[in-house]
Each structure stands twice: as structure tokens, then as C-alpha cells.
Image (spheres, rainbow over the protein chains, first blue to last red):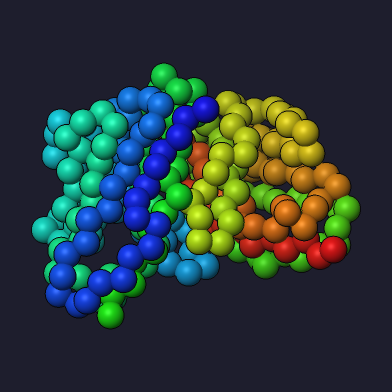
Length: 116
Length: 109
């Protein structure tokens, strides 16, 4: 089946620094990748959608200069949280979509970001 | 009105019970309906995937879609402690996905 690998699973960083999260599709080509944020006991909040080779489309209220998304290849997308602040602490989850894999939407295992 | 409504629970049942999880939605354009299971601090994993109305069974899990009522359900038979997780419904029209808030389920041994 389709597998999406997300790394790191957990990261702690100091306020003001930047953190990069990687999302890889291991056995299929992900034409579209999605980045979500999830607060405790809440559902997934879509942050942005990225198509390989083009700029990401950000949801309303998501700062594109703060959450940099790169989708340079069909198997890799990265989310960089720049100048992180404690309020950026959250669970970030990526997912990848390819209509060849019959699932349409496979999630990574998530990254727990804590900004101190 | 939210696109997808799901009771967050929490829901607590004894082992062996039948569990019923439900979502309602407002967009009649939705055609694909999914249920995901999410364990604590993990990404969601796909449980069931159905297209349009009808039932789909996979082991102890049965997914039902009633498009006329805009209502979907997930039934878990003979529930096990390992089923304790948050269950999210999701539905899509084209490449737009919408998720419910998730229902937290605890199966007590």
C-alpha cells in the first residue's frame, strides 16, 4: 500500500529558530501534498496544498512567509516553520495524494513541534 | 454551517460491544467517503473508503453511506481495547477533502 514517511517525529526548538519537516512518499509519486496542523482534541486544519513544481496554495489565515513549503520532487515536500514561537507548537501532519494509488490520500505519522 | 459534523464524544464502551460512529454533511457534491483511525500522537490511517451510497464491510468494520440523508456511519463489531482511538470521517469532492472533528473512542477491557 501507499506509504508516506514524515520526519522528524518530534522536535524541540528555541524560540526564533527555524525548523524543517520532511514528508516523503515512499512507493508512489505524490502529485499533490497537503500540510495540516492539529491541536489537541481537535481535527486536522489544512494549512496548504502543494503541487510538485509549483507554489503552494495557502489556506486563509496561514502566513506563507512563516510556513514555507517546498515540493521540488514527486516524492518530497518540506515544511519550514521560520522564526518559530511557542504558539507554533503543535502537531503537524503531511499527506500525499496520487490518484494512481487508489487511496487518494495517505497521511504521514506526524511531527510534534515544541517551541520553548 | 460546517461542511462535516461529527460528535467528538468521548465514547466509552465495554469490550465486545458494537460501536456506532456517525457524521453528517451538507455538501451534496461529496462522492468519496472515508473513515480514518488516529492513535494518540500518530497520523491518521485509512480504515474504510467508499464511493457513493451503500454499505462496505471489512472484517469487524462496516461503513454505511446514505447520500439522501447526507449521513455516514462506521460500525465496529466485537470492539477490542486496541480499537481505542480517535475516528475521523472524511469526505471529498474532487481534490477537496473535508474532515470531521473526530470521535474519541475508548474500549474498556
